[in-house]
Image (cartoon, rainbow, N blue to C red; front, side, top):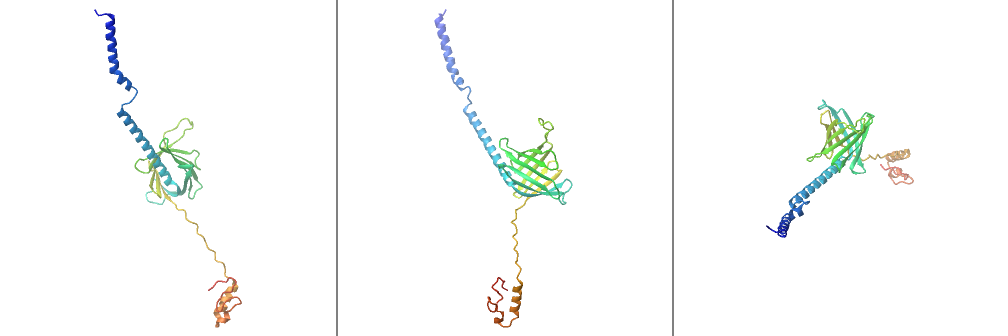
Amino acid sequence: MRSAPVVCGWLTLGLLIMAAAFAPELRGQGRLPQRQRSASAAVTATRAAAERTRLESGRRLLGRLVGIWHYEIWFAGNLDGAPDASGSRTVKPLFDDLRLEWTEELDHSSLVARGVIGFDPTSGRFFSTAEYSGEAAPDVMTGVLDNAEPLVTFQEVAVAPDSSTTQPAVQTFVLNMVDEDHFTLVPLDRAWRSVFTRQEERAPVVSRSIAPIPVACVETTVAARQSSEPGDAQLSTGEPGNARTGTGCPEN
């Protein structure tokens, strides 16, 4: 039978061996392996790059919307006829290049509208509000930018009487930037379609007013032409054979 000191020595040796075996694992607890840390850093960098790309794409699209536009609207069923309505919209920056304000007038009508459209870098989404003189409540919309083309899909959010709750989106439409001078707004249900065309600001035409010729100048010119002798057309301050009077009369 072994003595108590020998048994204690064996136990101590066993504990030391187990501690040495599990020490690397214990030291590694709470830290990701190198491969996982590299993968996590790559995912973070990719996400940050995508957010920057989305921000710049949103900024460029908003910049292309700035200007004066003429729009035409066709309702469902009007395939190739004249537009059912038309008007003008003016878009300009508000505070910075990520927020724009616009005003709108409908041709042959007293209805007017105004609103704001912008891009939220935090959420990566567009937002838009619109108020119309013929409606009591504003339209509030949120939009998602397409990754492949300058196209934003907006959904309208209707605020319920109780402001703490909201109803589902009631309308969805697409803003498509066709080129620098055209964009379209079309709802997904095809109830209407509108085409916006950029209008250039034309320089004002400067009209020149022609001063009337004094009667004395006309009489002098006629007398000079009727005279057969060059010296007969002389005036006190003029030259021989010339209809100038020296008082501002134009030459023939």
